[in-house]
Image 1 (tube, rainbow, N blue to C red):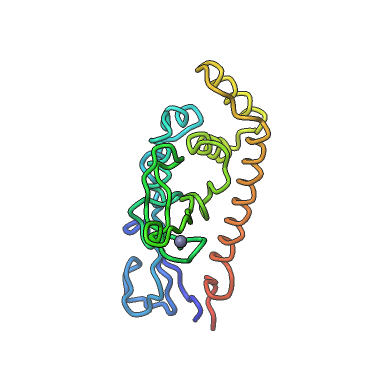
Image 2 (cartoon, rainbow, N blue to C red):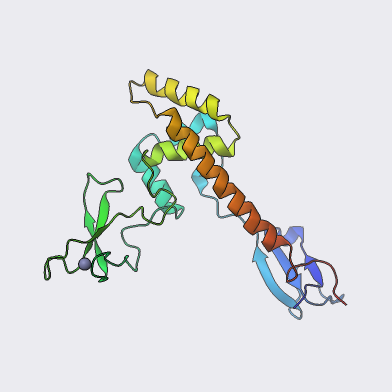
Length: 211
Ligand SMILES: [Zn+2]
């Protein structure tokens, strides 16, 4: 089905209304006759990100706990209560959450047949997420992401992050890791933009009238 009319009005400024025919009697913000789909354009931005900047990001996630909580709330990381749990890599049975303060997220998954059949299968909760295989803390990763979004040059980021670490007496993040992260983020941005251009164009969602 082709889109005939695309409607937007300030009254419902977060909505885009796709219609397969126009009906002049209907007000611009509502047509019950020919609506195909109404898309909510409101971003689901986390309140912490509304005024985030390169200057504030480091304080915003000043502890790893805060960074993990944020990443979980925006869906970048799984919550221990999420279900279903991943399957055991050894026997395929469902896993269960096992708390462990020494783990990156404070928990990991262990096989439910751990006690009965002595299965030793475990799964790291970062598997399949953006942070899988990441050697740095979630806090550092979020800082690098914000710098990337604000188009900070990678050489500047390395310098600033090294300085801020040294002044706090902390271990510095290696320049290679930061460069790797930037190229990873560039890939993510490329994939995102290619998906998005398909969403806005293409035969299904053309805003040109189809007679
Ligand atoms: Zn198992």
